[in-house]
Image 1 (cartoon, protein in one colour):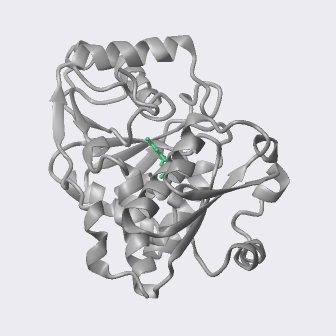
Image 2: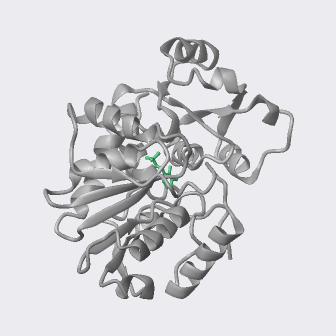
Image 3: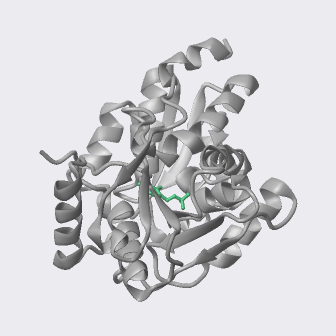
Amino acid sequence: MPLQLDSLAPLAPRLPSPLQEVEDERFTRRGLRLLLKRDDLIHPALPGNKWRKLAPNLRSVAETGHRRLLTFGGAYSNHLRATAAAGRLLGLHTVGVVRGDELAGRPLNPSLARCAQDGMLLHFVSRAEYRRRADPDFHDELRARFGACAVVPEGGSNTAAVRGCALLGGELRGRTDVAAVACGTGGTLAGMAAGLSAGQRALGVPVLKGGFLAGEVARLQRESFGGPRGDWWLEGRFHGGGYAKVSPRLSDFAADFAGHHGLPALDEIYVAKLLFALTNLAAEGAFPRGSTVTAVVTGQSFPAKP
Ligand SMILES: *Cc1c(COP(=O)(O)O)cnc(C)c1O
């Protein structure tokens, strides 16, 4: 039986997400206002941009009548956890194709354990196989193995997701001069930039090394909107060594920032790197005096810290 649209009710979001001003001396000293766009509060089980990207996909899965969702991610993927949680809440089967077949024989880390608890079937593949994650032939092989399913790409970043993230930009119209977001696949930046109005700028802070992201954001905008949209740029100096590399200095910065502003523990892989980047850019004088800078809090720390 196809999923009924009204059964998406368990995913009911808190939207627009709150916009919160924080008084931070490192910004006020430079004549800047710092706002936090609290996307981490959108939904307890699917926080942040993962709700914005998954919800439109789940809507189309509901429409096509699929009962199974297959997607891809690394061992600590927030996207896999959010997909598994959505599956549990909606009664959909979920399959997670996980990078690294060496993980198969080991106890699950807390993130994958949560996925499994939420009913996700975990399929570990080698790094070489994982590189085929966008290959339609690989998807057919996976369908032959796991049955008919809707396939959502790594990080959830397809055209439906990017269009979903344009609503994030829409919520920031008239509210800020710069809207900044940490980037993995770049899908959130691609959508957010498209949703802002003329004169507003979007800043992406890549958390991965490699310099491939500008091309990816351009491709995602082309596929989702038919061409370039919005005024966006990337600051590639703040990946801190690469994906999930968190130095003691960054950890200290994150704990201090959260403590100082009474926030829940920051996600260190993305959100802490974003705020660290903005703090450094403010010190460098990258934003004109009098500007408002908004940092999108795209998620929560996992596992939650006390
Ligand atoms: C997935 C994720 C991102 C990256 O989003 P992309 O659209 O892949 O660039 C940023 N922040 C958090 C907390 C995330 O979970």
